[in-house]
Figure 1 (cartoon, rainbow, N blue to C red):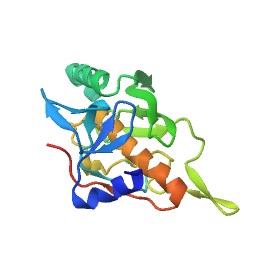
Figure 2 (figure 1 turned 90 degrees about the horizontal axis):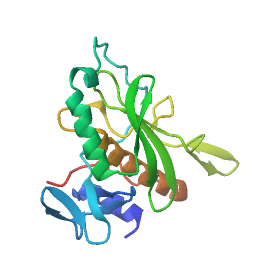
Figure 3 (figure 1 turned 90 degrees about the vertical axis):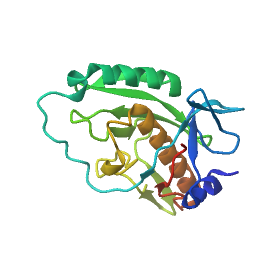
Amino acid sequence: MTIASLLSKLGRRTPLFVTVAGQVIGAADVVKADGEFRHPNHGRVTSVAKHAFHDGDDPIPTEVVNAWWINDPSALETERNNMALAFPGFTEVTTDGRPGWTGEIDTGRGKHWIELVHRRDHGLPSVEVLSARRLERRAGRRFVRSPHLFTSGKLCVAYADDWNADEHDAVTVVAWAAHWLAAYSEWRFTSKWPSEGAAVEAA
């Protein structure tokens, strides 16, 4: 199944998963055992939580006295453990005093180095592709900017309302970024964005 045909099934409420390397796969052959999803060829996979791509201005962070990782250090430790299982190739980083993650996503049609950075207010983290100067495709003699980017050029992997800080963490955002990059890779080849997000997640 091609990425385009896989992603086009989203309207039919098909759960999606992301491999450790970052490839988006369908639910076929994925089984849940001991609290985790596994695929016979890809091993452990991560469910893509419901989300919708969009664009527009970057979110404005809410002013907070203390960052969430200072108020609740155990939440960041839990995230470290989750990332080690889901995306072990990612490395924890600190950007402007904020925790984050950097690593490579291999969509199967291209490799992209990304950086995810948390917000102090525990809102939806920002995601930036570090391996590309511009996210665009050639259209004749000109270049067309990719859809679903914030004005800053960072990825609009989800609406702010899709993010639930009590349930989601960096693993969720990396899976969303992998989904975004799979759609972007297809858009570069076909000029059609194959998905507007994930309508359902695996239970």
